[in-house]
Image (tube, rainbow, N blue to C red; front, side, top):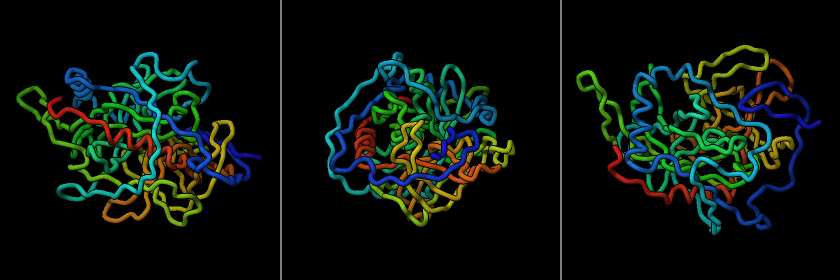
Length: 356
């Protein structure tokens, strides 16, 4: 029997895992298409998002719901009915790995949380900064940026690296400018493509002036926190991979060992896996790992050193393979050449220097 994964993440499953003979992104794969959605572009739009996430709202972050992957069919026609979107036929290039980059000063702090709204409700996920030519790219799960069931992108989307206690933002707040995804996420809710690269604006911090808060520009994301490298086509098995995230949801037995406020990690080996009910034909599973809801979008890193390394995946689904009380594995989509197309589109986007 094929086990069923639960949306980052939900109930117990059991059964043997099936191994796959091939992975996507090989020479026989069809040309990929990047699906790009604009978020906040103009100065007024960025300011509106910033004003929404004033310190008093960020202080309530622990009361928000950790996002879970959607289930069910996407909205007819795919794409968004509320947000301008475009499909870009990507010209696949044979690109080498992206090297990790340290911040201009201090220690790298690439991992953090994203906060956003869907259908008027606040949610959060995990995410990480990735090195890019524009110094402004965040990797996360696609379900942490776009809901294919509703045909809607998240709004009021921000990235907060290494968030502090009580809603503090020691490395700044970065408003999302655009989402780059593979078109089969919004079009098919296909978990082989549950990843997104979000281009963000320059960051800001809130400064108290009298009785009001004023946004102060702090520069570009990568300059402040560094950026993970990106290594594509790392096929399993791999003996040692680090997965990170901010888990918060309950385990299958109802226990809740995580509070979502502390960065957690798993170190494990990887293997191939599938979940036909979710169109996951080329998944990569890491175990042991007891992550729960909230870890969605957190990075998988190899070569970890001084808080830097190479991104090879993102948390998408959790698994309870032995049907016991605790999750025991987490899975990521396979990041092959088509993921490189999506990343390169995000890395090529530019943002203005004077939005805050």
